[in-house]
Amino acid sequence: MNTTEFPEVSVVLPCLNEAQTVVRCVETALASFHSSGLRGEVIVIDNGSSDGSPELAARAGAHVVREPRIGYGSAYLHGISKTRAPIIIMADADDTYDLQEIPRLVSKIREGYDMVLGSRLGGTIIPGAMPWLHQHVGNPILTGLLNCLFDMNVRDAHTGLRALTRDAYDHLKLRTTGMEFASEMVINAGQARLRIGEVPITYYPREGVSKLNTWRDGWRHLRYLMLRSPRHVFLLPGIMLILLGWLPIIALVSGPLIIGRLFFDFHYMIAGSALAILGLQLITLGIHGKAYLIAHHLEQPDRLMNSVRRHFTLERGLLLGLILITCGVALAIQIIIMWAQHGFENIFELRSGLVALTLGVSGTQIVFSSLFLSLLQLEARKD
Image 1 (tube, rainbow, N blue to C red):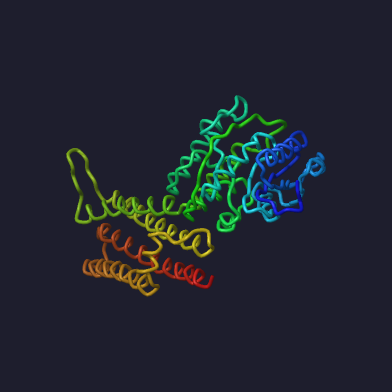
Image 2: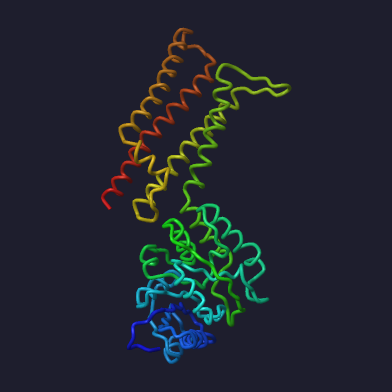
């Protein structure tokens, strides 16, 4: 590695006990620089190795930095902070990715792409390189879910071989410390409207024991996708539940409904009340979630939140909540008056009571949700 000239490319390799392969990876990366005429550096992040991997990597020509905080994301966050080049290549130190592919990734970046993913699913997976469950179930499902939730179109969102520009990396503001770092990078790039390209690559069997835990790391990716998508996890189900909830309330408020041999009575109103209240809860959680992500710079405001910002004020939220509460209380008072007129004897006003309860609880929920949303917006304005 030529240390007297400013590098064009920085290759970053996290390493945890990869003594069998780290030298080969470093040497392959340096050879790819030589064959393509690139000026480059190789940075190996020691993430707690105990097998001599850091020393071997240093002797092979890598610059070794140490990151004591265990985690895929932790290693990359620290390692990339030590790079000097305008183009960053991310790979693994287990020799499953052919680092002779570096010039192809760099060429794609120079075409104008901000990020380039080395697609295993769009390329060749050597037999034994990837477990059947990962190749045909885990990776396709997680990638498909990411594409669906975030309106993207990538073939392999969780590949370990990727390139990006320094400007793109700085724009992404990455912060996760585990395997979900790979998902966060692609999601943030998509939401920032960065130009993402892919090149098909060959994925090889690794030597030694894999650090990947199928269920734990798969869940971390899935959990992160859900947390980053409050619209799909909270808002859409909430709208459906409100519609399903108020339908039987409205249909049965005046009495039972008979359709053919089917008999619908107040039991469905009770279920509808619960669904309507739950649906409103999900909607408010979804809006709060979006506001939180924006306040903490994890997302840019979308059409929904821009609409909320234009039309929502604390006063309007309080007014809507108080109107619903007032309607509920008015119905409750009407029931009490009717009860008094019957000498406080047993009367059957369950239908009106359910409507009053649903309106009152919904209004109260809107009042406190409006206060909380205003707090989140205040935080966003402060930032």
